[in-house]
Length: 306
Ligand code: 13P
Ligand code: SF4
Image (cartoon, rainbow, N blue to C red; front, side, top):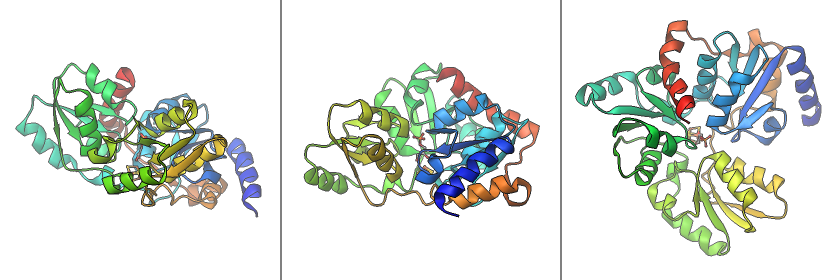
């Protein structure tokens, strides 16, 4: 079967088997093309609730499929590849957080959505990269513990200086690997380009950007801008997507390290195999009602404030 034939078959199978396919914008292009909903973490967790299908196939990483499950307990939710996890989501465990809460009980805990469901159960509100600043501003509490990404946390802290925000050491190994030297080199190679970066990058990179935002924010900014050249400081799929969608503009990746191996694990064949036989080939997310109720409170709070 060619890629195109497999895509056609997937489109038929998802109708026959009542599947909605969600894909994060970092997954491979051939998967983005057959998905029903594509977007950043915020859009995906908001729009998954409006899917009418009884089955959801999440092409992305584990915490995203878990979030989809806790918001849709009556549905079957599958993750596209059993090994696709986000290393940042696993950096902190509930015992560590319980200990920190006991030490400073007056601090509200804000969790980046890149956390496990077990950890979310001990947080007050979740944020995504596109909603973090707005939500932290709107919260009643002025004392905050921001987990686990200290780079996104530092960005929020700079935008909301009136609040006391405590950070911990954690973050995305992919975005955090980009250096200020790489920014200098990219700007020297493309002096007319605007630099657009994800807030998971380190402050020395973020401070030099012309725009800082989520994956959807970066895409929207580049499409709207009158400028013709852009250096993209997030996973390289975004630069590729933009290049397809804006052929009159030029997009350069900030660093060749900006490739997320977990987001790239899922292949079109994995999607096809899950749809052919979800019971035998699929990786279904299991969660008890009690677990879901505890963990989803901070997602509900995010959707209420965001
Ligand atoms: P977004 O919130 O921009 O989708 O980012 C998710 C993510 O995993 C970034 O590395
Ligand atoms: Fe996790 Fe970073 Fe990959 Fe996003 S890019 S899924 S934060 S490892």
